[in-house]
Image (tube, rainbow, N blue to C red; front, side, top):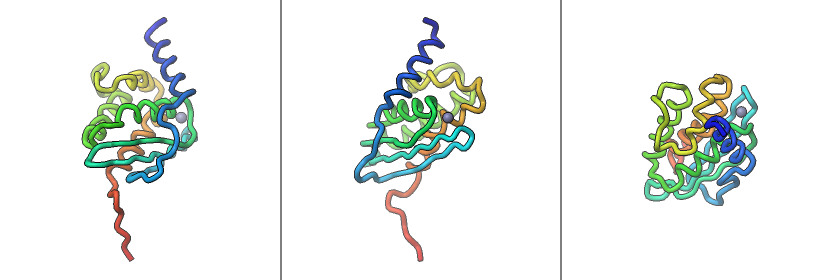
Length: 147
Ligand code: ZN
């Protein structure tokens, strides 16, 4: 089995059995993402306490790549400080747009997705959940309502 086949297998496995799929009762942070190029929808719900991602779940529907990316992302950032999660966004983004050198140890299984850099129209599938993560984490958990 080549490395590419192995990566394919891991992506398909996450696509079929997404981890952390579902909803959280009282999330502190939420965001939605939509990729019109492919039709992927993702909703992220996150609970942050003391600056740490305690719980993170996603729902929605998308292709195998966006689902696998969301699944691996939730596994990776759960339990990590918000700052570390935002750094991982940058690492992952660089790995799929092709400006990072080689693979990144801190990305784990997400390195499987670095192959999408060869398919520019799939890059948005892979980065969609990450953009949702970033926008969720950067928003104020207690939004101010102005009149
Ligand atoms: Zn897609």
